[in-house]
Image 1: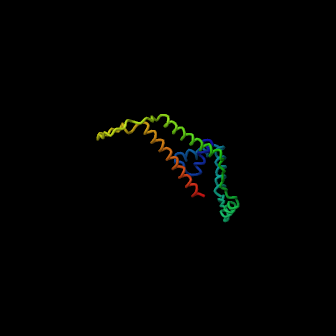
Image 2 (image 1 turned 60 degrees about the horizontal axis):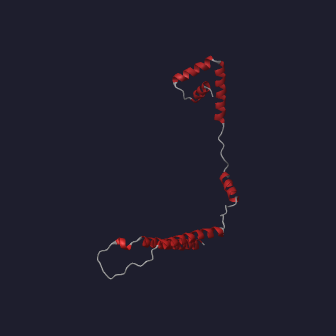
Image 3 (image 1 turned 90 degrees about the vertical axis):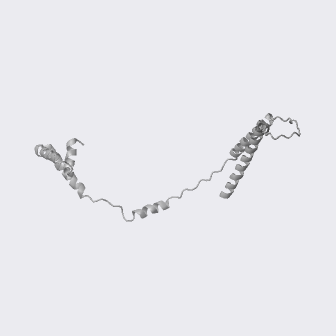
Length: 161
């Protein structure tokens, strides 16, 4: 759309300032091509104003809803888990537990400390919390956590079924 056509549409719609109106009116009066274009635009504008807006039929919503009801409902997919996946995950955890237990056993010093009946009220925590004790504690906690997670997941699976 060129500038003069835009100005003519604005003139027809009545959104020009007074100075712009006078300028467009003078162009329409002086130029035959612009006057012809102005008359064509007036004809288009009157045709567009005479059109009625189409409205959907009264049963449009009902027809759409009936079509939707005819569509098949989506089916929930039930997938079967491959038992090899379960066995693979189980073997990973069993091997992990075995590796942790074997590491703890291999790094454990199984010699007994000297036993004496000398009681002392000085409590030195470094004598009681050794790396071996920490490894045993962490290994036991890991095994207990895995047992708890297994119990929790089995209970959750049984409630879903």
